Image 1 (tube, rainbow, N blue to C red):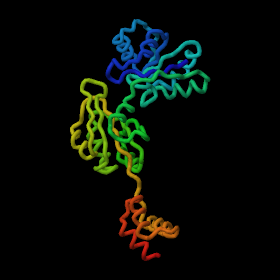
Image 2 (cartoon, rainbow, N blue to C red):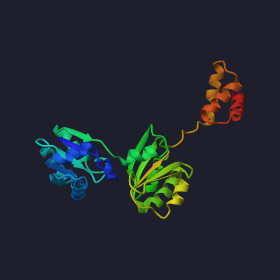
Image 3 (cartoon, helix red, strand yellow):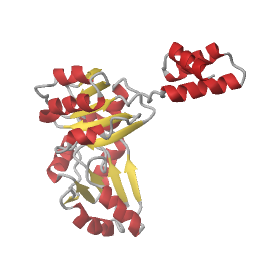
Image 4 (cartoon, helix red, strand yellow):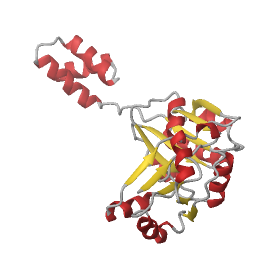
Amino acid sequence: MIILAATPIGNLGDASRRLIEALGTVEVIASEDTRTTIQLLNALGVENRPRLIPLHEHNESAKAAEIVELARTTDVLVLSDAGMPTVSDPGYALVVAAAAAGVTVTALPGPSAVLMALAVSGLPTDRFVFEGFLPRKGRLAALRALAAEPRTLVFFESPHRIGDALADLATAFGPERRAAVCRELTKLHEEVARGTLAELAERFADGARGEIVIVVEGAPPASASLEDGVARVLALVAEGSRLKEASAEVAELTGLGRRELYEAALRLK
């Protein structure tokens, strides 16, 4: 079978027992960077020296068929440099090929920068969207297309582009939108900076060091138009509510002004 394995995103102590056992027994590892894999084996004290197959964004399509065939007769452990394979890392094309070929795919869960940043951000976690790395070109246009997204958004960004990225986020989403910049998660200099996009853009204008995840609050619910609000007020009145109480109820639900609703509905009543 093919085994997707999450590796530490910084702290080696986060390597699971299942990961260490798999590293010590498998005969084949397909990894994003074989040098990183060798370093991981050494750091964890694993003596096993399996066959290593490079699997990265430039060769995944070509290597997928070969690895799937190997997985018919032996377990193939798939690793990215950090975190879970397929999440902004190689592995997706391999999983698609394995599924099409009827080869079993499973995973060893573990560290995830996406989930950790979301959890510590202080922003809603019940619904979220992961957008991966922000595009280098057309970033502002891409962000404007996401400005009305109501779910919490999670982005990866490089340290030298963080200032420009936050400035574009403030432009696209509004300067008062809440966000968190999560840096060097699980490492010695871990930092979670919370604030508005304007505040964070100023704070990180000169860049930052380390691996970075940006978490941004989703868009607030769109306000109802006055016309829609008045229609709801009149509907409540038709059901027996007094105009004053109906206006107050709709104002609370929509954020529209109570007096404005009352006077507009009175003119149409």
